[in-house]
Amino acid sequence: MIPKLRHWWQETRSSFWFVPAVIVLGAVGLATGLIVLDANVELHVDKKWPLLFGAGAAGARGLLTAVASSMITVAGVVFSITIVALSLTSSQYTSRVLRNFMRDPMNQVVLGVFVGIFAYCLVVLRTIRGGDEGAFVPSLAVLGGLALAFVGIAFLIYFIHHISLSIQASSIIAAAAEETIASVDRLFPKGLGDNADDDADGSPAVPLADQAWSAVGAPKTGYIETVNEDALLAFARKHGTVVRMERGIGEFVVEDTPLTSVAISGGPDKETAAELTGVYVISRQRTVQQDAGFGIRQIVDVALKALSPGVNDTTTAVMCVDYLGAILARLAVRGIPTPYRLDEGELRVIARGPSFESLLAEAFDQIRQNAEGNVAVLLALLEALGVVAGRTRDAGRLRAVARQVGLTADVARRSIPSLPDREGIEAALERHTSRGGVIWTTT
Image (cartoon, rainbow, N blue to C red; front, side):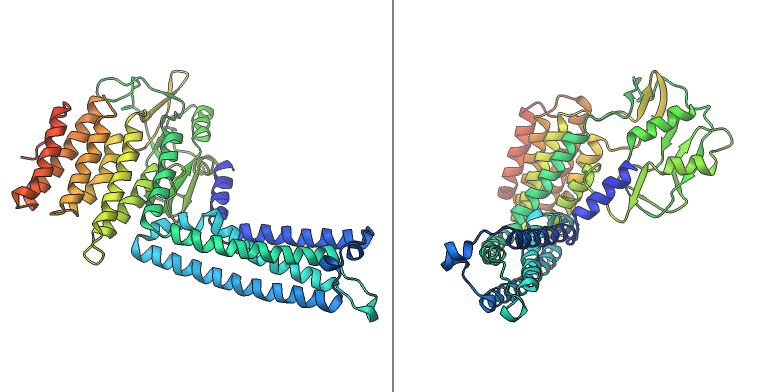
């Protein structure tokens, strides 16, 4: 249940209805509390401060009506601005970042504040009665409506400022990078059981050739959003078997195609298969919570849109490369668990996850392939790779970085005919060599 509840919470956080609904309920509760206080406690504030609280029933109705009508109008304007911003972000950058924009708490709170003030005024208006009806004017609640109107004005001014900043390329890329770096910090290193002791070829010191694997199909079509790793390990321990993940987090799976395989003689029954598939959450889209690769994918998509002929925004592409370099530099000093997980010396789970080399390729391959002839972007790629190489001493990771450097150098030499334009590229390659890096050549 934990992954499903976490999935529900993430979906709820990304919606535009949850936070406004909570604020509306709070506003209704505030209005009710002030009305009850006015009705049951004789504060006589209208007599002590007549300039503030001395309005009659007609004046109070007029004030609250004006506040309510203006707030619902502004709420419509805010909603329209939000839709325009979403449309601009999707067309100018990539639709993959819309989820981050919708999850922005400020956008949700601003919409909720205006709708909440409207609801507050409606509740208070209902209780105001003139002399013929048994006069009752909740003075504190009416003053609260006036105060909330000024709060709404402040939120409107701040929202315009906030939306102007949030649709800028720098803000969008930085937000995606910060979320991805947080995911890297959370996920790596992260064990699923104990890491197995690998031998030289990366295989566990446990015989696997004699295992009879039975596939368990996916319950639905979609992307694997999360996996409850503790539950997966507990399942393998409970049944005394080995579970092999056929699809990893972030991968697309088709209904009834293999999701996992288990070493159970005769195959698992329906109840056991349902228990196993229950540790997965399959959704329509990927998220960053357990999938750092998707955070990288978002920034790469922004860079590819910037490099497209219709946009041709080199500065944005360079900015994306800079942040991708920061993410990979963070990952370079972190351990990535092996696929083989042991529990008290017994192999229990063969996981499927990313490697440093695959994430490095995810970050830089497509940008390099679309940056032919673009000196600024190719130079930024080399500089970012230099930063990543400087953060690790692992031979395998350095080979992966060297391969990317060599591929980038090959693109530069092939697509930039002018020697002066290639001088910066050659200087960057010299810096890689001087650091002790080995340039991977494609020839």
